[in-house]
Length: 305
Image (cartoon, rainbow, N blue to C red; front, side, top):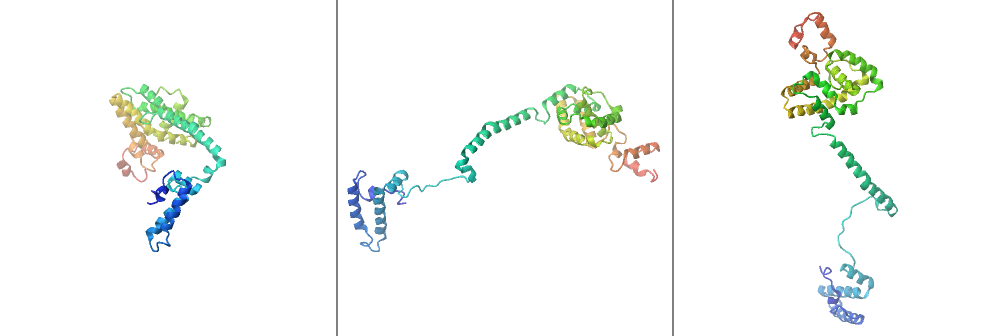
C-alpha cells in the first residue's frame, strides 16, 4: 500500500524541483534521524529508513528514476497482464511473414468462399428441404385430382435425383431388363422421355412391385428411398397450399404404399409384407386356387399347400 502511493520528494521532505545537492543533504539528515542503530527495536523507524533509502535511489539512480516516472514504481511494472498461450511456431519471429500470409488468405479468400458456397447451396432449397427447381416441377405436374398412380412419375422428376443419379452406361442393360419387367404397369408422365427421370421411375416401380434389383442399381435405389420422404413432404405441402383435397389424400396413400413396399390396390398386400413369404409362393397359391389375402387365410392352408 505504501509503495502504491510512493512519492520520493515527499519522503525526503523536499520540493519537486530540488537540486542534487539538496537531495543528498535531505537524505543524510533523515537517514541519520531514522537509522535503526539510533532507534533499536523501533519497527516504524526501520520501515521509514527503508523508504528514505529507496527515495534517494529513485532520485539519484537513472534506471530506478525511469521506472518511477514510467510506472509509478521504482521496481518497474508490477501490473497484471493477460495473454493467450500460443504454439511457439506462431510467435517465432522468422515465421511472421508466413503467418501473416496465411491469415490474409483465410480472411480474404477462404472465409468468403465458404460463406458464398453455403449461401449458394442454401438459396437452392426451400424451407421444407426440396430444391426450388423441384418444387416448380411438382407444381406444374400436380393437378386438383392427381391419382396416386401418377405420383411415382412426379417424384422421379425431382432435380435432386438428376444430380445424384444420372444414367450410366454400365447400367444400361440391367435398367432395360428392369424396365421391361415393370413396363406393363407404367402410366404416362411428362418426364418419361428424359433418361434420368425414366431411370428413377423404373426403380420406384420395381421397388413397389418387388422386382429383383440388379447389383449395379441397388445403391441408386437406396439413394432414391433415402430422399423420398423429403420429396413426398414437399409434394404434400404444394398440394395443401393449393387446397387440392383429392391429390392430398392420394399423396398420403402413396406414402403408405412406399412405407409398406406394396403396389396399388394389391389384393395380397397384407401377406406380402410377411417375412420369408416370396412372390413364387404367392403365385403357387394362385395356381392351386387358394385365396390368400389375409394372414388368417394363410394359417388355414394345409401343410401340403
